[in-house]
Length: 230
Image (cartoon, rainbow, N blue to C red):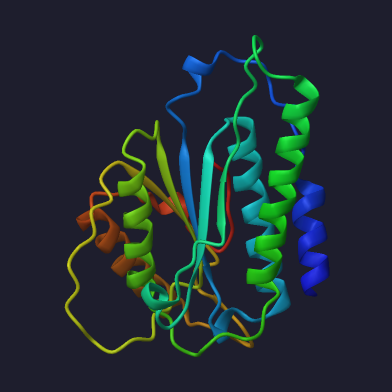
């Protein structure tokens, strides 16, 4: 899938809700979703990137519908050094007493296009490095959650094959207490099929990792595709 087609797919699939009219005090505690895109070479297949784009569409649509915040970044060989949070959008609700409905709709449309463009640049960019440091990517997510202590609920979406290629090391366990985790693309790598035993052993590792971090990663939310969100 070309970069242009990814952008069109993301933008076209998002249905604007017209900024439903709700009281401002009802929208203060926002849901927060962090999305991490695996851009390593093992995910370069167009079908894999299309799968990521489809899942991202669903996440953004939910964010729009619930007037939440979505933050996104990449997972590569050194995400802590390369982080720029290119996706960062909060979809405000309209205040019926002070806001113009047309202005609200225009603002939501502009934000949606900006998010779609950022996803295009991530998913349609040049091939990434061969290394993948997923745990460092999760540390990025931990920082975002810490910056939004009043979020009404928190979700982490990993668009990744979940195959990590970094030197062995001892990392501090991240604090993801109360975070609901979704994994999309697990075991799906470019140009080859992973053995079932490798997929299952990798799954066991990450289920244990996120449990130790205090997160909620149920087996039905870990797999090749996104079944539902949230």
